[in-house]
Image 1 (tube, rainbow, N blue to C red):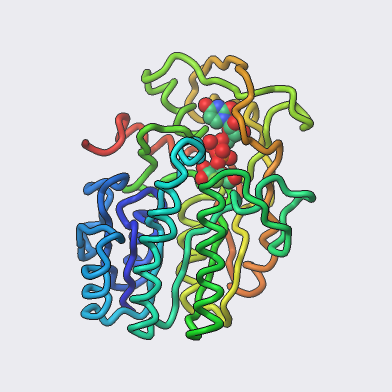
Image 2: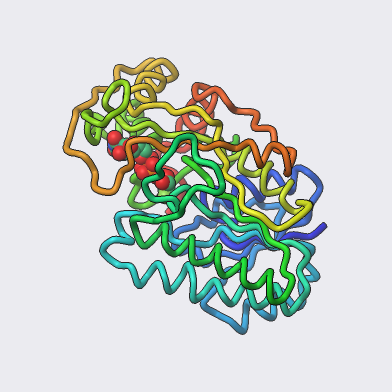
Length: 323
Ligand code: UFG
């Protein structure tokens, strides 16, 4: 089986590419390297540097590639940035991604797997979040992902494109080769680990008066290799569908810092700061459907294992990939 991976030089796309290759798939990585890294492209894959904005290139590559499936990770994903530059998100995550969707239909691609997000739910009414929960995004990033879910659904109805939208909760961890390197970094776990790496003095806790047991936000952290497993299984999904991917456990910001102290042996000083706007108190997935229909079985349900894998990668790559 040959898979086209858009965004295969990014954090989740690189781990997924490695996982596919380890499982006998052939992979072509397509990435603009705007946020991705050349060193994050698995050397066993074919690499094409290109942008989804380039409709002609996208159509040519898909036409000539004889792909069995497409995985689409190539999106901008900074919630804060999307609130100041929404057009960047709708342009890339929707308008440019349409080129990939059209190419999939033109070439009868059998399976299209899309990186969606818990951010499509906004502030959910009940926890844990099931697939049928109301989707009311509270930022343009989440809205752009929801719009693409809807584009997929219409292409399914009209052209019969088979797709799977995987809604990740908090992607975390690393493989031995590939890890997390965003610029700027905004995610909790890599920022915490910058403290024992000597890259920052302390970690800021954004708010400690939420309505949660210790007052800090609860999140459902999911290892990138478990996300990769879901992508591979989705290629053979029995039907088109949407699936929430998380471990089903909520860890608070304070708990994550405590686990990181244990894993790294560093005191990791923390300071409470003002709340970050747009942070829901709690986001926890109900992934029953993915387990039942995709036969997904996450392997990293212990958050200590997730943080340890990230720590191992950062010790080898304290400043991320070469720039
Ligand atoms: N946090 C801190 N200090 C920091 C960074 C984060 O306290 O320095 C807190 C946040 O306020 C939040 C939690 O740690 O409560 C996790 O924050 P992240 O930025 O790591 O992740 P988010 O939950 O904000 O976002 C993640 C993905 C998004 C996705 C979202 C779904 O990164 O792409 O989940 O809601 F949209």
